[in-house]
Image (tube, rainbow, N blue to C red; front, side, top):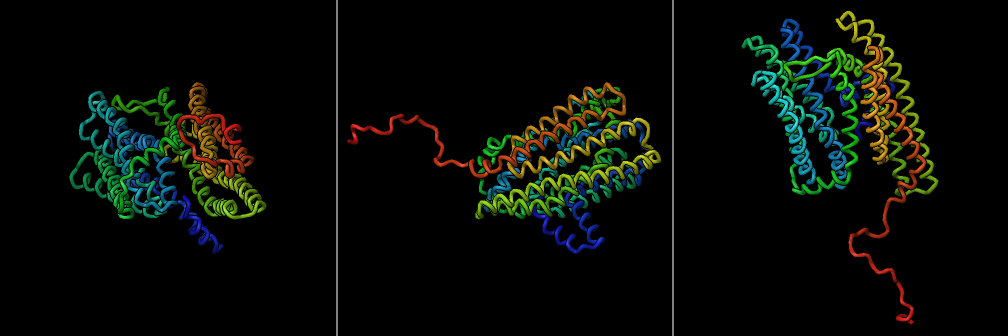
Length: 482
């Protein structure tokens, strides 16, 4: 997200309460606004079109389809996007802009291929075993692929620092989705469940097309150097593990509870646990502001310290390097502590508001008993994610792997254990996994601080490394040279 710090500094620098609110709103726009736009549109369509009057089976089929579209759309995109982001950063640094389109087409192929590899067999099962109408299955698959394209193209617009366009395209797509659903239901008397799914698919497709057209307009040249992109997957395979492990860890506890007494099977195809999934959603919203806070503060404060240290390394005295290094890590520690303090206050307030108002909206009983533990888990999880970003700053891919893998594994094993406890402790697996990842990441950051000089100054080679026949051990013949 590098690049928004300058604008945030200008906004917050004016010092007024109004401008602080503007700065917070801008931070939300470039981080979580697209997600809220989609959720808000679904809720608006439900209210206006009378979703509550829909049959029980149709409601569950629509909810399960949308849930699977989002979860598996994120999962199939996660193995590739981190590596492609690193490639893009290096290409832009080298100003080799003609290499961006080969990267785009390669990533597009990989994302679509993996998405189809998982999506097509499921759709075949849904049609033949679940006996869901073919047009409904096909529309759901199209919506899934369209959302994959949206998530993938967002990567390139983020690198171009076009965050406002991402939010604008999502807004435009969801406006079109609402209009399409309204026309289908009110004018053509089409089925509500299918109309909403079709409209969402159209909205995602429009968003993807707008994003792709913007990328093609920015980068018109194509070097056709595709092998270079694949070489990055071999060179930075750790990023594949890190991003997939973290994304899988976000949902692995849900997958565990999909196989408990809470599970619901829809059309003999979709498996979910609505009570637990809803508690997870509420817990995530309780702590989602951590993302906004972290992006804002890192871009405004830490990134500047990191830049000063980098400049000292390339052209400063040893004392300057040490001073900027100490200030950088003091800033890092301060940002983590500030994130914990501010987010704790926000989470407590949101949690109390949830307890007061959710029962009036129909969310009570088991959902609210599961919610507190999951809210604590997501609080720790977002702090852990901030530490992973800091590990990326220092190129500690080993530490990032240890963090994501330990988080995912402990969350999975902890959820297997916690599902045998009472409802209040169902989220203990996520808490344990997030805390484990947090501890591992913090230990690695301390390790990086102690060994940063070695990492910066001792990673190069004096002679080029080549493969071939080993030269003779004898380097000097005294008799010959007498």
